[in-house]
Amino acid sequence: MKQLICLLVFGLFSIAVSAQTIESADGVTVEIDNVSKIITIGGSITETVHVLGMWDNVIATDESSTFPPQVFRMPRVPYVRNLTSEGVLSLEADLIIASDDASPVTVIQQIRDANTPIILIKEEESLDGVTNKLKVIGEIFGKEEQAASIINETTKKYNHASELRNTLTSTPKVMFVLQARSGSFMAAGNDTGAEKMIELAGGTNVFDSFYGYKPVTNEAILAANPDYILVMQSRLEEVESGFKNTDGVNLITAVKKNQFVAMDGNALLGFGPRFGDAILELMKELHAELDIEF
Image 1 (cartoon, helix red, strand yellow):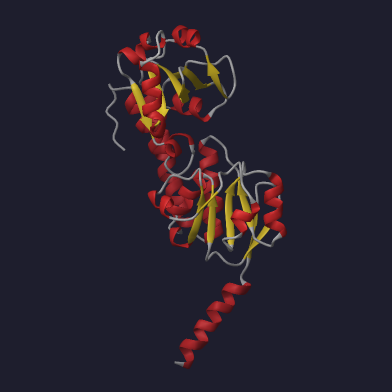
Image 2: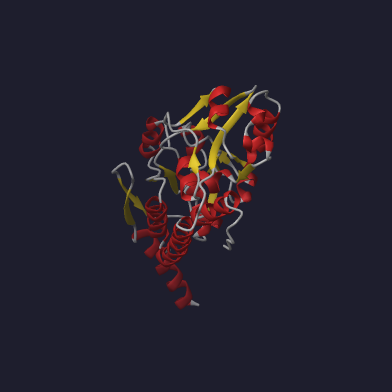
């Protein structure tokens, strides 16, 4: 019994002193000595912590996190770009892991001033971004092997999609719709995650005359005449209804053929651990001629 007590005490002591330092995406060096109670902020951050087997340590997520489904049964802090220090600090977390677009910056500083470690992870809409996210979070938890395994599997699927693109004989036109309200549609332009995913899946984004996500006129939609309408699953009903009940745009190919593609928002746009699967899933929807298994 004495030996057991000694081992337990030694183990606790080791945890207390074997702190590691991780460089946050904003250049701040963060010391970590306890990961018992974690808050995750950002959909892909939450997914990555989950897939690395640390879910039991998560006490809260932010409102942008929608996967795994358990997030809806636990405390939630405000949306990643609208954080409040009071809401976060009241949960008394040992560690906060957030995407680097977490804001306002003043709130990030207030959290650090309260001596709560917060690490920002760089968000990049690419395979390199997914890989970096897994590596950094894997290092935080000592899960480097698990992270490497997921990176390897994701890279295989990414390369498989690349090989399939080389066999394609068509490039369908795709319009990603972020939201539809009162016959008005907000679409993805250049330099967006939606555009990158469309291209990786062997399609072409119909709007390249603007950057980011912006409202587009019905005349522009008619002129673009997309073959497919891509939408987040949570917005499918409003988008489908908007197109089918709006004169003019209900004549485009995508509507006449009922070619609406709905996908989980975090999988499609999160560039997290489901990145490889999301490319292949979208590719399968856009290219029925391909026999894709994943």
